[in-house]
Length: 410
Ligand SMILES: *Cc1c(COP(=O)(O)O)cnc(C)c1O
Image 1 (cartoon, rainbow, N blue to C red):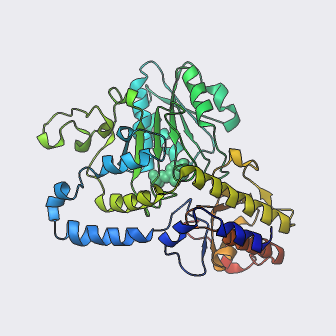
Image 2 (cartoon, rainbow, N blue to C red; image 1 turned 180 degrees about the horizontal axis):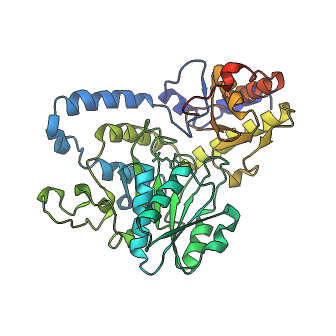
Image 3 (cartoon, rainbow, N blue to C red; image 1 turned 90 degrees about the vertical axis):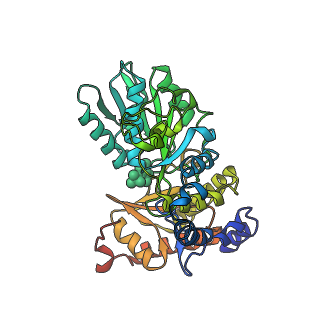
């Protein structure tokens, strides 16, 4: 493809108008929205208003008058539209890590006779760590079994309480067939818990179409909710009466303002709430989601995959470095919206591109990772990024001491 071809794709892009909704720095090609989405312009004004008006002038009255107390269910209801759920099945709370812990414990509460929590090796580390912590807390009740990805389906058995899996892998971008894996879990009587951190806002997700039981996901990646944005929880309606959260706080009580001594769970999605919601975090997340809801999820997925395909094709057409290998599925139907290239100098390569204004990230041990969030990226930008990537490889521009110095966050 020539650069003019890429410009022609930009001119015909049905999502092009969304680029004006962001204020990205000049000279930057931002290929890391899969890790931290940028702020929509509307977020800046929204946060300023929440601080100066709702908090500053409304003070504590704003819990009622500005709808703060309903924000977790209101914003959850909006996220539901992005993931194929009912509004009453999603709530915003805590972090993804905490929610995964809560829902996995909740799955055990629904499966009294079963002990095994099944996941895969190489899953996002915090997911495995949360499951390890839960298993350590309940040595007589739960055991964690992590198997190689290709062995997962066959490892589901009569003792499996819940299968915990990330739909789009954080490194490789390998996309799991949600309906097929969920059906395999159900065939053995197991529940299915999906981590949608790299799915929501990127690919079209249909939790209820796949008959999923439980899900969690992250607010600060494709949803552009801001660093450390609150995360969300999905519990299928059929489980809401019975599931129990292990973190029983007042916001999950049937009547938080009754101030009773004894915990009585809310028997709806609010049963997954714990403590006081992060109002500023919710406000920023809601602004990101409101923008996302203006776009067609199928168009987002199609453009993101096309941008990723363009990047792969242009890098491979130009780079003849034998050490470079595509570490993502080549078939777009099996991929999320990011692309991983393995290279022994992956860290320095990513740094050399950042120095040229092309921001991606590095995932140990050797992955240069680039995300193609469709709302603010264009085809010509991706073409330019691929050309720069190949040029840095060909000239070994990565081989400078400053590009080898590891920062705390990679
Ligand atoms: C980003 C991500 C998380 C993040 O969890 P936090 O609690 O927000 O740190 C968890 N799981 C997966 C699969 C992710 O991609």
